Image 1: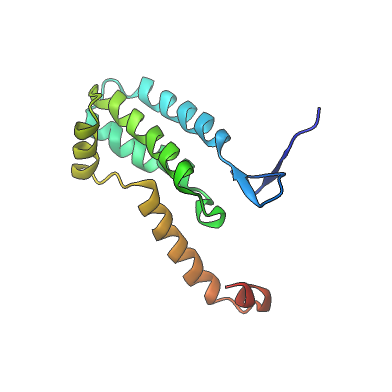
Image 2: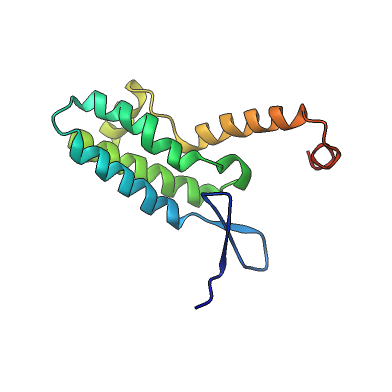
Length: 138
């Protein structure tokens, strides 16, 4: 059995293709397994507590090493959809406007915003290193 993916780090999978690309399908599985485990144990909690647990446990699974891969718009919308579906399940609302309002009031940020923050922090930290290769790449 031959695979077309190479595992780099823990959450980064490179696809064998003509052009450099990453695979993000495994993140769906990890996110849903983490969220479902969290959600079934937190039914007695308040929805706000469950959302805070989502922010501190599940969303970091999606954003780990994301700053290295530079995801495109399709990938970020897929990852945002994961978070939106989790919010829908927590609050039992399935209207997109309601989900946007809940995310806004509970400070659940968009994946693109989280990516940009992490990317800036990554570039800032790597610029401080005394590594010739990294300084020429950046």
